[in-house]
Image (cartoon, rainbow, N blue to C red; front, side, top):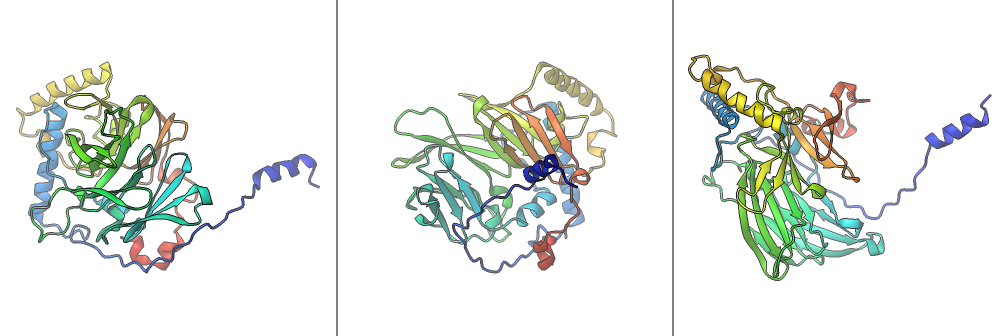
Length: 384
């Protein structure tokens, strides 16, 4: 016999939702191919060079020596695999869900909440991209502009009816005979709430996977103007994976490879998450640390200077596989940020302190070993 209390509990557990299909797009069959970077055929000389570069930049980072030029950057294989396994299309929702932008293969489609997103109110043309998974799309705070990036770092900005307002060119690749350097692709495309004087209406931050940040002043009528540049290579010598803007504290949250325990100043740095305060003048961004972390960094410098006198110093350490943050996402109440790691681990951090709130390894998550039917139907995608 089931009593009334059990019936109430069952009813609460089995909540039904009405799902209405507002739009449906038939996609062409996707062909997944491996580039030269993804096949793992790296020469012995290339591997030795990579190890040497990592040791040098890790050493300079620990000493606190400022790096004013782009460091050698070879993106982690786990990052390449995860990004390449994503779908080609990207979606961005405007504030208060007033508009939605769908970045497709050759266009960006804009729909409005006024008609429940049933009809297209604007469509902008974008060139077909050889690496569509490496693109980004985002809305401006006032919902009048939508920015779309290409895999080569170029950014196209449209208005709500799909008219192209202007294009910000990406960094030119020196040797065009080689495969596209995906570290030039945009990892973060962010509009900030910086208060600006006329004629500029917004600030747009373009951050690539290499760790290079470029700030632009933008306006629908005036176009764009470069404001400043910055490099995260000092903290992330192998590039970054994700960056989000935390508006309440005016800071940037950056995710990338975690640091070795003896180098990291905090648990969040060990896991690959750092916070950067936005400054009004040079150097424009400063990593947020407290007194204890500054003291620990000073002690590390003294220790490493002593190791330089020994043959078995930092350059002779054996490299080890490091986990890192793939994606960061801030909660709707702005109190927490969740990190999805290369290994499948999930971490939740309190904001703005970046104190660890909870952590689940892959094996601790329910149904972690289930295989998606999409991967079963397309084995090539499962190993991409």
